[in-house]
Image (cartoon, rainbow, N blue to C red; front, side, top):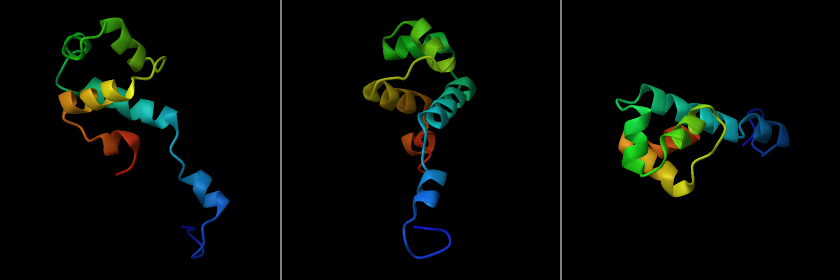
Length: 85
């Protein structure tokens, strides 16, 4: 919905479009400020600690199931990370 009219408009769509970079930043912050080390997170996920490090450097994206498990472990809403809330 456009901010200026009752119709959908392309300008507002792009203004509010969610980008993978924004999602990565919020995920990195959740991991950084969670009450768990990167190594502990990797162990709970059953992945290599270097993979979590790549998530933190924004070099790699977690798979959907890994993303869901990260949210569960960190007790953070996936909607929050995805920018939906």
